[in-house]
Image (cartoon, rainbow, N blue to C red; front, top):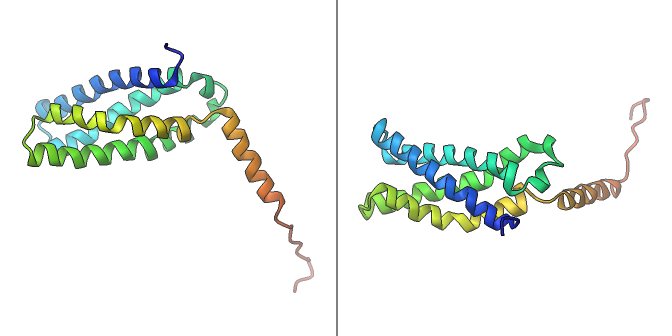
Length: 158
């Protein structure tokens, strides 16, 4: 059961929800930050937590062989999961808390649920793609570069 990336993703995500809700409560209630900036900060804390565990557990079979690409994976993770999570969290929180007057923690749980499947697909297919997918992409890039005829430049000028 624990071998499936989807199961691992949701296990990491479940802990990430606790991290996000705790951070949100600290930022909103403890530090008295407005709920929208507090939500963005809490999502960022959860993103970093989740990335760390996805690297070391969810997709360890892929990342162990590609350790040098960790920085690029973190950037891709933020551009996909991060952008999606922050955007949807802010839009949904504005609607659910601002308009519907739901409690902010309940609204955040509802929003996290909405984001989860889209985040898995982005992480699995783009951020933590398999070594074979990375090699196929590199091979395709190399082949397209080979198709371009080299241009020679004469040192004599034009």
